[in-house]
Length: 108
Image 1 (cartoon, helix red, strand yellow):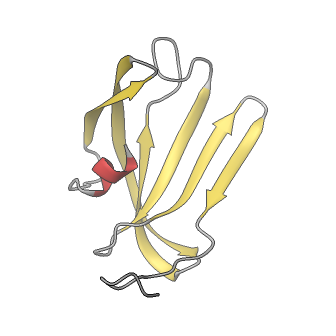
Image 2 (cartoon, helix red, strand yellow):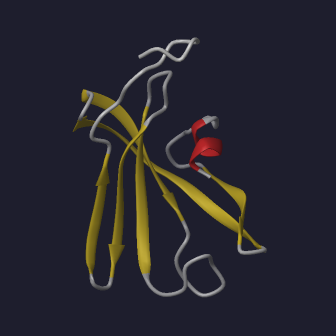
């Protein structure tokens, strides 16, 4: 799903749906483009866009209450640098810690 989102034109206030398959079931996940902000991450201070895929709730991929936010850089790489899951039991932060590049021959 995240690879497809990275190819989309992300405009704050817009939303779109993505079909996602999980264990033979296909879900239509609504993705809202929520805000644009300058954030601090492993890459330094970057312009990023926050999206919210609607994955929690009855009839969705993840039953129960929760909210997911993903921050994607606005540069040409469109890297997901931070994700946050807000659940009943607490909040989980997932942050990009390191990035390495390879050239076409596989050398770093």
